[in-house]
Image (cartoon, rainbow, N blue to C red; front, side):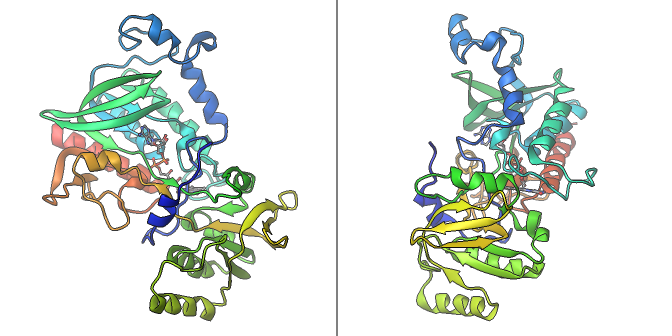
Length: 394
Ligand SMILES: Cc1cc2nc3c(=O)[nH]c(=O)nc-3n(C[C@H](O)[C@H](O)[C@H](O)COP(=O)(O)OP(=O)(O)OC[C@H]3O[C@@H](n4cnc5c(N)ncnc54)[C@H](O)[C@@H]3O)c2cc1C
């Protein structure tokens, strides 16, 4: 069982982007995209790795029904196949590039558990995160002649080479290296889930029902007239609570889950922020949560260790990020902003931490890039990156 670590709690910081929390831990729940991913596992349910071991040299150069054929090199290597990476793959195909999209699996995308998203053009009734991913995957699969989509596969290392980049990735229990003239990083970020009695699962049913939110810009509009519990103890959680007032909830309370409220701040700053909370009528409670209830009534009822319960209409996580996926951009010399996002120019070319100039051929798109964590932005950044590849190479 994957457990969130204290490290992520400690390193999370206030961001200019608002709150964006993913439910995509290493062992998330199953869903429709799991079926899509497992259909790639080959005929007759043969366990992953078995076929690879039977064929000398592995599967890489042997076309197998149900498995994509991986070439040694492509025009573009894309790491991550969430909303940004899938769009980059599609755009690459449409602009007549070859590309490979290496993805751990749709269930690791941050939107995967979002039951309804309201800002996606073309879906006036809204669309769930996994349904949108399924559609993007289906669109990419129309272009298998140009774009190889490998999942579940995990990129583990990336290096700059004379004529581009090399990326190592694990797939079918083997490590493979692929080369690309251009490299687009689109691994997103992974957000913290509240750890309740040593488990992250307890909150999933409430998140899946849209009773606990993780993204202010995605779901803040649902709060008018609602009693809201904000989870967290940091300045980030406090500022989120203050910002959520904008949407007109009837009440907001911060639940610190056993942590001292704003305990990380020096006393003067702590007093100042506490004053802001008091002035805004936002109380906090430092009781430890031991479970949740009220799902049938569509409530978010919190059970505390002292035996008391509190009922809210909605929960809102202010816990920050578990993993910013910084290791690949770091290895490639990228510059990061103060919140840990990769810095790029407007064409999404990654800036060098040494020179401040774009690193030739290297792009970062989607949530990992310093910008706003929204799907239309993920798509726009993917478009910009691939169009820049076109401009640079044609
Ligand atoms: C609960 C929730 C609700 C949301 N609702 C909305 C909404 O209503 N509207 C909106 O616009 N946005 C919403 N968002 C934000 C939105 O989900 C993100 O902005 C979007 O998913 C970012 O796309 P991305 O491709 O950058 O990252 P992701 O979609 O998170 O995809 C990253 C992908 O990279 C893969 N990956 C990571 N590391 C590796 C690796 N080493 N090797 C291979 N693959 C890797 C993962 O498998 C994953 O598929 C929501 C987020 C959450 C958490």
